[in-house]
Every structure is written in structure tokens, then in C-alpha cells.
Length: 178
Image 1 (cartoon, rainbow, N blue to C red):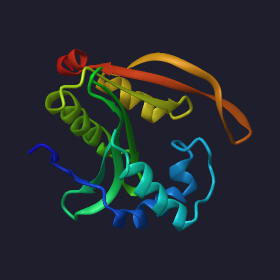
Image 2: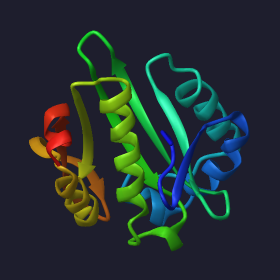
Image 3: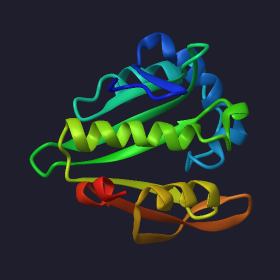
């Protein structure tokens, strides 16, 4: 099936998902590797972000990642800045439930998203940005076939130090070969 694998399934995000997303958005350990402006968010701000940015955008498709056996939301994934003329998008992947970290759920989810991007939407290119200190994510992206395309030097200040943001991309033919 298109939006499920052995352990995960996707479903479209809804306004009701603002509640669980808010818990992830206010967990500093979760946001440390994904959010450039590390800060706490009020629930009204999270709800507005979900409604306007995630659900209200005509250029993105966002999905809740579910643990298939329990149906429990464990993360979020999106294709953003969808450009059908140039057949490109940026992808985002966050596993918000920490007990699912390091167990292959991110890999499985990213493969599902890329299957959809390349094999259904017929995109030519998918890109992403990752903090250079997020070694596990960089390794995951490289394992799947993403190539380093550039660096925004010292673009994020975290824990008293400047860090680079790595820009990565994968082309449709590279993904099929993988």
C-alpha cells in the first residue's frame, strides 16, 4: 500500500494533530536537532502554525507518522515547497516520540515519503537541510542516497556554539538505483 510499510503508516494531518505536535514542539530534546529557533511555543501558536503553515499551504503535503500496530502518532513528515513545473520539493522528517528513536522508524518513514515523491508524484529532485551536529540524521540521509550539495556556514547557534546547516539532495534516478 502507498502510505504504509511493515511498521509505519501515514495519514494526512488534521487540526486535531496540533495537540500531539505541540508536545513535540515543546520538547527541547526533540527540537534540539530540528528547530533553528529553539523556544517554547504557546498552544495557540502551535495551532495557528498547523492551520496556516502545515494545512493551509498549497505547496506542501504533510503526514502524521503512525506506529502501525498501535495507531499512535510518533512523528511528522512533509514534502514542502512542492514545485510541479521543476518537479522538486524539500522534505522534512521528525520522529517526535523519543522511544522510537534509533530503531529504524525514520528510515522506514523517509523511504515511504520518497516512494511517494518519486514513484507517484514523479518528482525529479528532493532536498533537505540538516544541522551538521545531527550525525545520526546525516548518516541516515546518506545511507538512503542523499548527496551533500552545500553548507550554510555557522547558520545555527546552539548550546553556545555556531553550527553549519548541511544542504542535501537526491535525484529520482539516484533513488531508484538505491
